[in-house]
Image (cartoon, rainbow, N blue to C red; front, side, top):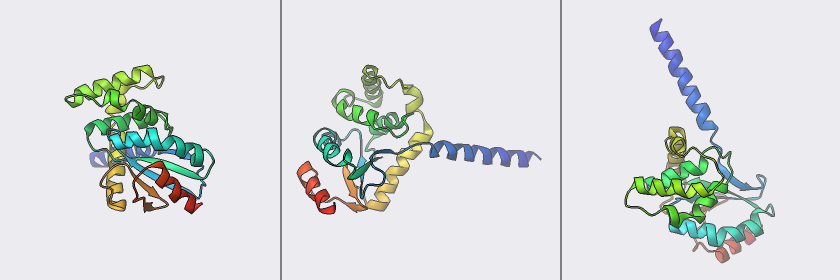
Length: 193
């Protein structure tokens, strides 16, 4: 009888964990039925990813996302523990909204500084004080389900698309292999429309 109860408890906990993991909504912008789908593998501590969000993304959003021509999914490819923690914040209690992600990239230079993970976490936490996101920082950073989700995305990107650096864009299941600037991206997208 004890073994049966242990098996039931184990099954329940596994289903509960799967249910929680399934509630992690991907961060996607744009028309879900768009002809062109972009997956952006990023690390929140990568300055090139920050450049993408400040220099390329605004035009991409205006010309292609807001017009329904493409949708973009932001996937995690953390390059270090700081990026992993920031990714947890970006996903925590946001239901797939990209506001926190863009906020963190916009303020990347404020929170990325520090001699160790404790200092960087403190800077990350302080950078959120100016926001109205109302997140429980400790709860988000210590969320094991979020961590598993983020690391699984990283592993999947490495296996499926041979991602080795960030940012890497996958456009309709093919790796974008040109220099990542708006001019090159726009040319590629216009050919696909």
